[in-house]
Image (tube, rainbow, N blue to C red):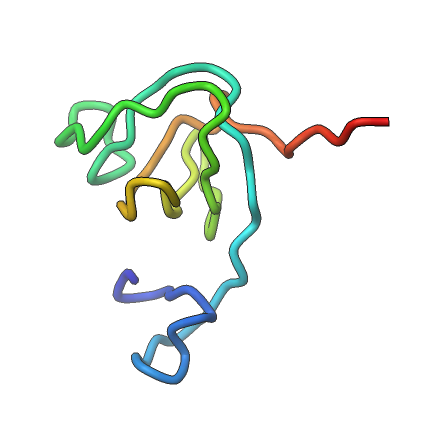
Length: 88
């Protein structure tokens, strides 16, 4: 959670001014999960293509959310994630 926003799944556990439902996205090109939206912020992990990222907020070139497999919350470059594709 952030001071202004939390995952709706935490509503019974934490208070936040706003809640968001996670939007499942897929990492399409490898990139970094960062502590803040600043490109020079701490690098938390490298996310590889195919990784699930649950986006909770979009601002500018960044998305904030959860790297599900790692259990880490942070920011990614919006260009590296996309809606999952479905097979025909």
